[in-house]
Image (cartoon, rainbow, N blue to C red; front, side, top):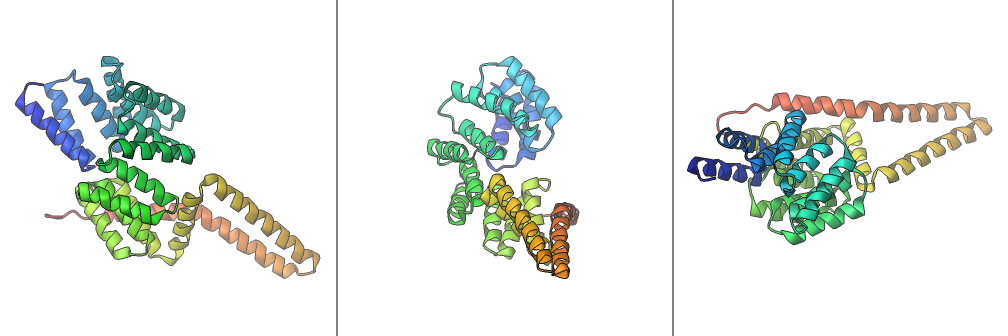
Length: 310
């Protein structure tokens, strides 16, 4: 890469990535490939950015081009792993991430990606091990701090998540993912106004970022008595894990059946009917809650008006 203009574009792309601004990184990498269409590293990085932008078809094409050009490149395997992960092909994603680790065992990004994959499939202990290993290898990478922070927040370790968020923002104040994490921590603590400020700041960087918009939706849910119940329930499910949540729900159903039968046996049919209506209401609420939440999220997307200087 001898051309000064291309080197400048690379620098711009890496700076955008360090801030979590994938949209600007995509623009710079496309310009790099216009100048050097056979640059496999640019194809791989572009694939990763396109995954973050939820453009999976284009990301898959870029990942295949990268892997075909340099099959022994860890970055090419990482890109293919990200595409497979986004497509929810978890076995293939794990294979790709492990291939990258075999080629580059001390690269923190590979451990981070593998940790995020383990989180998605409920392998929490393995996930935390990989995320902590990533942070150990590169403690100055905001991405590693944010990844572990998200995990710790989901498991209820709010203090540690806040520390990780603040550390990542100290290293990179304009990092979008770190801003979203900090906003989520503040929201969990009940500081709605500061959480909203962090969400808006993140949206200023990229108004299409789903993490920032999801945070805005969560803020709306938190401030709504109706959606607030669903938001707290969803947060609790994230903390205890899907398996434990399923056990609790099964226990609740058994309790409901026992209570209604008990009331019927003791000649309290009206009480049994009220319990049945209450259970039906809870079920309906759990069904409609996610849909309402998504509508609130879309409203937030429509309501965010970008102004000059915003």
